[in-house]
Image 1 (cartoon, rainbow, N blue to C red):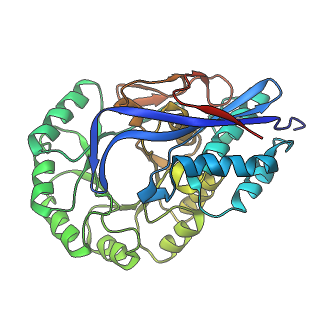
Image 2 (cartoon, helix red, strand yellow):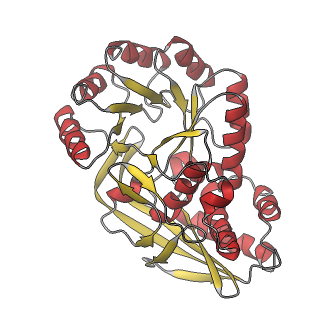
Length: 359
């Protein structure tokens, strides 16, 4: 491909939530993201970075600074995905910034080739179900939100828990009779022994999986939980890059992996994780931070492209007070579909912050 990167812009992309969203790591009211646009003459690719300091180790200003610093290395680069990924991979950390650039590059390549991204990547399916996430709330509120989600066609719910065996049991008990699939996400909230107590208390309920029950650094604890749990144990914060996946799968620590573009640094690294997991016979989930439809759409393209992504958690745009994105991912009755337009299939994005050109 002879097309080259001619210009890059990046700016603040602040997104307010309809209501506070609580997980075991804290309560969030606004996502401070970054919108990136990469140009090749008159064609533009769009990407988004959604840093979460406690998970990705970076913030909005850090993402903007990284993009400014790396831009001179990308200008005049041909749209060769592997070569651009080589440039990105030469820098450590800053995964949300790398993800924003990666998404924009893939969008640009799809537009140059006049193909939807999921068709270029594999085109395994045309739709897939996503769960809907419910934050840490009292049991009666969890049930209220679950009933509302069911009325909107969702058949799978992800319930956030805090690491308190009795309180979390009551949250799950409150929705156990609703006839839905239940996923549990602890966001590192439990000790290994406490999560085993919790798992035994909910053993009579139909639970599909439990995600990141212990702190990200407690690999032996994660393995202990996996070996003593009747519920499949998925890693999230413990696996950022492909090398993390390789290590944990080699040590037999997990039954599944939740991939997030903001954790791994973009689509190239995500594909590596998908392939490693498939070779090991381990399924993948694809999830999200508090992102708009820009990066959610990129993740959805991966979900439709690869057969080993069997679980999907792409719902964060539903929690935003305003959706600034036209086109891209659609969710109807809990099912994700994508447009057949080239690249991501996003037609427009309303800039909600200051945008600067990077030279």
